Image (cartoon, rainbow, N blue to C red):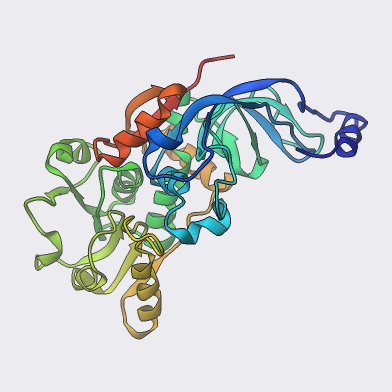
Length: 351
């Protein structure tokens, strides 16, 4: 929280909003790292945050969980800790994606006003209120519920950047998407299909029908078939599952194809599978294949691109289930157990 002089300065600024010292709010609280969500995520109360002149206070109506939630919760791999906190979490909870209603805006914020429905990303999103940056939120798609909208930002932006910006998927391209039934994968399949690609999607047996419904031309049950061992060569491979060796992915890639690695094994405590991404980057200059990875960026421009696709019906979030805030640990556990198709949302009551 900012110091007393800073709060006084904002009160003296015409149009400034300040919500410091206005009580507490319901939230998920995490005080230490751990791999078991039930052991480290608990319902609690936190001070309601205040905002600065360039910030927006959002009343959260829904949030969502993804693999990044687990990484922030567990503090693994250790490479994330310079950002998340060296010995304990820097943020009170690991939530990122949200949808809600603007409660107040700072004096220097333009483009948003109290009452606006928005979606995007912010730190500690498993709470009734969050402080958001204006360049990381956008108007909520009109046709989506708050719960559905909250599942889009992190996973949707990652998929958009993987398929469009790094995969450079075009019409008639042969595209393979691993981990196609997950949050990023379900968006990636739809995006590749929308760009006119021939999409092969990989998932487990129970999830094949759901993936096929997203527009995949072919679905592969990874428990029965090995699509990387087939004669087929792909122009683009979006590797989200993160379990196959780099040499096998390259073998299934066309000579001038593009490999985009967006996921990695979570077992390694130091690098967590990112060594595979690093090897791809080191090898890329010495091969005709385009091998790469990226860190997804969270920004309003990408959200607006997703909104256009969502409003047009080209893209739709797959909401597996909705849990109340008090069951956030249960939602994360379902994700870890592999029981989820698409995304899991966390609902908060209206004000």
